[in-house]
Image (cartoon, rainbow, N blue to C red):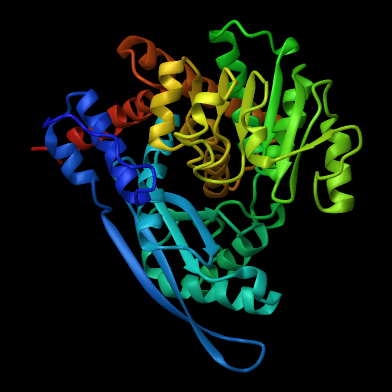
Length: 423
């Protein structure tokens, strides 16, 4: 391919960063330029307006998006986020990253993503339901179990997925649970889905520790973000013998070098609304927590929290990205040079989409698995993906994020070639 890439400034548009990562992986694999040309833009982009009757009786129109990046390896797959800052370029970038994530794990999907520009915290339950159903009415012709399968994302949840599945089923005239994943169990959801992201993340940490000869029984971890993924990850790591020494949420951060009981902390947060003030801990600044002594750092909340500014001071040996995009391109380069193993988000948090795939398979078969079956299959797929990524990283002497993208892109490019797209 053409000339070398230059690292973009870390405040770049997310779609520019996604395309940069795609091109870098294409170049590292010496792929035909046409692979990049086909994948650099989404195959389909939909912008819809959604009129919703508010509780006041007025009609308010919301803007929604659905982006299908590629169907080279199967139907599109990806979440729907409800957020006031949703932009089309953000959704396009997320759809591209979903393509890479799905194919890294070996799922028969291309990437998709959706979003609605709204503040769900300011909507009543009735308004939220009408918006959810209206979004599905707007995109009904472009989604389906064999076409595009949405899922929950930022500020959407199993209840919203149930409303959306119900609306789609009404519109097509048949019960169709396979159109969407992340649903409640009563509506065709899968056992194990709620813990899938955290379990997948912990599986990758376990494998990374083996590669680094890190004894988890003597390891210390810091968890940034104590929502579902962070809370569950801290408990699962503790069960492996890891000492949790620091935790933060949007309200504050705590640190205790002697250890924090994640179960007691979860109970405390449920009662108080925050980890802030948990007894026996030092209250620290949330940004400073990332730089405190630990072996494992799990950013499980926000984007762009590990930057070129703080990357030189991070002490962890393993960074497992439970959140999407917590590390900027500039920080990636610094961490790689320092020998820190970054488990990239498309690998570390792929447990969610993997169990979403299991849910879809169960829906299509109308045959449902036990929680143990789900976890065993998840462990196998995530472990295989980690091993392929690590092997690629070692063989090519490249950062793990680039290695993960290379493993994924090899699969996509082969499918494109076999289907005659590159002729």
